[in-house]
Image (cartoon, rainbow, N blue to C red; front, side):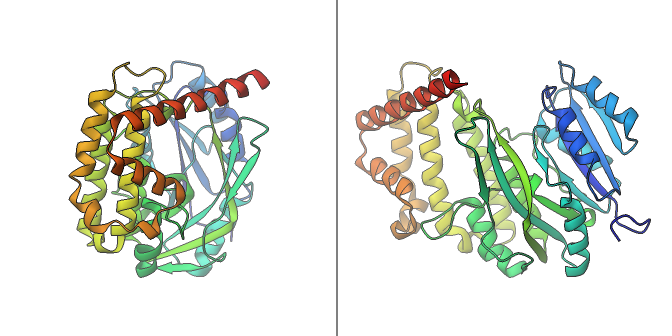
Length: 357
């Protein structure tokens, strides 16, 4: 079935912005897939480097590769352009610096046909820039080829995509780990107002629509973790950005009446977000005066009625438990000292890795 004329067309959307170091390797990986009935849509989001020219060279070699050029509007806009253009029976995403197993899409499409599931989710192999860190395989917490129905998607998968707990690890909510029928998500677009965790919001929306989801731990997406992460730099509007994400997530959960199922994980997520906001204040490139901002976060935490009513200490892992009790101490001096030291430790590690390279 995999290479016949009747096989489903798979649209692979690749957002590209200043990715000249990686894009050729990524597209060649996709061109070399054992499943041949694909269209590879590279959306050049206003790159100022040589990305577009490199893509054009591959277009000349493989007619299945399509280059779309647009002004720079961000990764969500690039993915949306790809979704609107896609002609496939199925849609998936790949980031320009990542790759996937050479037989991945053949395996996915064939097993989707057998299971009759509407979408598939697969495992991740985290690849770090530092050779010392090596690789980390992140399998899903179900047996290979398990088909989750709507009830299990909403009670097992979505909560743990919002936050991990002591019993269950976080399931990374990234759009590139799904292949889904176009008819399910053709009108589902990324929120272009979000500049962080936009993948998570998209994934939760997609999952809420599904009646069946195939789990494939035998397929691995190779996700490259770079040291220059967005979250390692100070964001002046970070708090407002996170609030927009929470508003978008809460709307989806309310639309599908999922808040009761997710209340524990939402509380754990809230603690994580408080910690991220504090970390942001103490980045090396942040303003020197943090006192007022820390106090504002503490006031918000103290008045967080949803967290007070629904928090389950037993569900907190060690890291979240530490953050929670640190917030309960309600001391801006203690918090400032700890988060300042945490940032110093992070930068020392990054500097040491740089020297070893």
